[in-house]
Length: 212
Length: 251
Image (cartoon, rainbow over all chains, first blue to last red; front, side, top):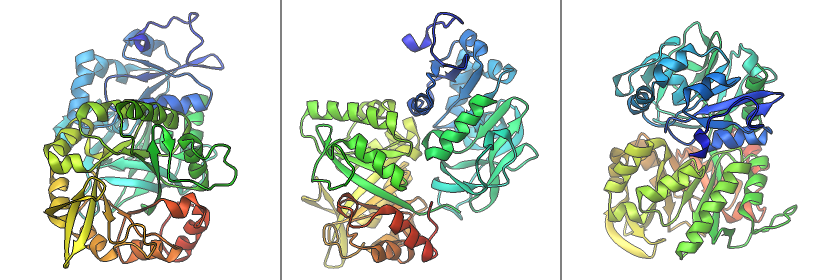
């Protein structure tokens, strides 16, 4: 696949913004086209790759994911990405299931996570409709990721499992209970919402991530 | 708080919108991408594209359209119409669709709902149900409402939820096209019996109808076509009025 081609520093202008390259980890989990398009709207050609060399060399890494946790983790293990991802040194942004997989564990498929974020992922109770689907607000924002984003900004979310609030929480959302809709640990960032589908505010968050 | 969603629906044939759209400021009213962008800018929360192409070539053109929409539009969208296989769904999702909507094909082969939710996740599987109330009983209809079945709306909705549907799009054929309001009694029963989101469809004529379907119908989202396409109800004003009526919407 052409997307997986090796990308040496000088051979391709792709994925560059002010000389920075963006790689979206392509491990077969879900719709990553939309993320790629969202970066393209920001003028950045993000590269899809599952090649550890390409991922390690990137200035920014996006860890996407839609679908089921245990099968996604299986795909990561098959490619050795489960050991690579937690060792990355550049800014990494986990989106949706990507963020959940960066946590300690998930109730979904009884999955052990990558353990970057010290919190657990649980299923919403049936007191609310599951999945949560639609636009909800993010609040108590505390990270450069949210520079220029106002409190209670709307984001698009689709999920049945949530990360429990912890001291790495950088944004909260209320759906039956308060949970962590964004997390940060050192160079690792995670968002439960889909910035690529969250209109102009979502685009701003991706832009902020590029500027980290 | 999770907000109620406003969802314009576009009929697509051979990659172009049909049924007429009357928007000012549009260079090409037949171009789904341009229309989708306009709706996104106006504050639509999601979009539904219903593919009514009869031919394989027409469906191929729709795939190109999906790709162009995903490229240029920054809100989620669903594609429906004539979807009956895992491969077709795979192609649509690969092109950037967020969700697919299946209808008759699910009734003909209910396992399709399981197959799609297992492979792609419940979050992208919308089951559309067209039903008509006859002698007090809501019966599911197929092929755009032209073929009646003996299947009960509520039993079918519960079955698809158990099979992994992530959302139900319920169109009342008694209300569709009437502009007299949504089928709120049936909608509220669906919303109370099921634990997945319900999209109301059929009957939107004025702002009050939207208020009613969110309050009385307990709907999670409301879908409409002509009232949006012809500018009868501008989305920004609709959402403002919903907010004034204490309905949570994204402004």
